[in-house]
Length: 98
Image (cartoon, rainbow, N blue to C red):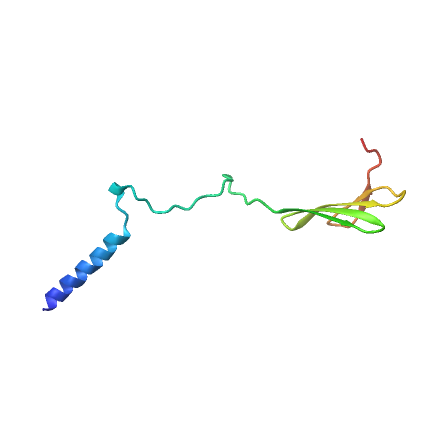
């Protein structure tokens, strides 16, 4: 009686393992993870262009991956446009614009 129980359990475990493994002769294959289209492995960062305008000026900001790269300020009226450095906050004007 005991050997019949062990044989039954062995056969049921073997049938479960056969059901889980794919049969290569049938052409069934396990699903494979697809890699991103970028083959270098680098993650593409999110780019945001933010435009804010009020009565005194127009501000354009470029963020890449959440980090501010450029800030362009165009005051309304006769004032010249300038850029603000994101790291230091210094302003710089383009003297000759070609």
